[in-house]
Length: 292
Image 1 (cartoon, rainbow, N blue to C red):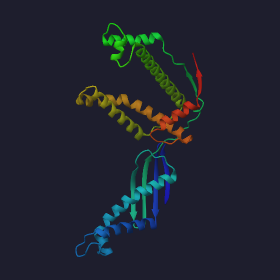
Image 2 (tube, rainbow, N blue to C red):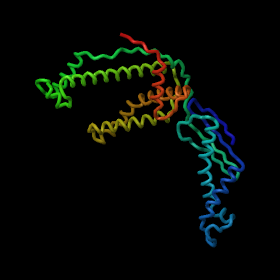
Image 3 (cartoon, one colour):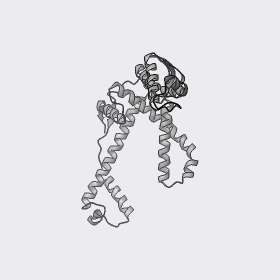
Image 4 (cartoon, rainbow, N blue to C red):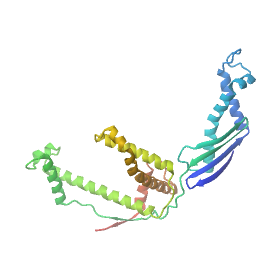
């Protein structure tokens, strides 16, 4: 197999592939043998038609089947041999198939090269999370107001699923603590990504941005439908929704690609859990500093 890779831009490559010899010949023989077993040719019993008759009746079918079986296999071998990180199905053109040779051109979108550096030992400023009695009181007063009750006591606490008022107050304090902790974690992650991404400019693969945009649009439509907005009204707003979604989709793709690059450098498996695993790694490697 001969392969030649031509870089069209930072996210697109043209791969010219050519194979010849026994691989192609054997595939033709294999397909002819499959068809011969089931071929129904007038004047011959199934499986007994001579080769020249099969050639006459089934040449185009065999040609099509050989392409269907060979092209994907050869393409995958070429991509693996050239170590291309392809992110979308290829566009196959210029296909030429003879009895002993096959050639084609595959235009593919690939992950851009990203010069990620200084991602270890990032400085993280964090605060000790605490909950004041005023915050607890404010939250409880809000519950009291929404329930329209005069006094908060053990009986009211039990109606909310707590044995007494003290346990209810503890639960409120825990909820506020968890909320604050989650908010700080989100802030830290956002700042970490922002610092690592600073100065990294690269072309985003169009296919990835489009896929992310459509996924986000679909979810937005579901959310609007769940809120009771009629289908026709949602469809009317599609163009406006897209305008709002596209920048965020592009941002998410950029972050994903940066995390993927770090994952490759640190031998972290790239799967559905990759972003979370890379973030865990970055947080573990960071320099944490307690601030007042």
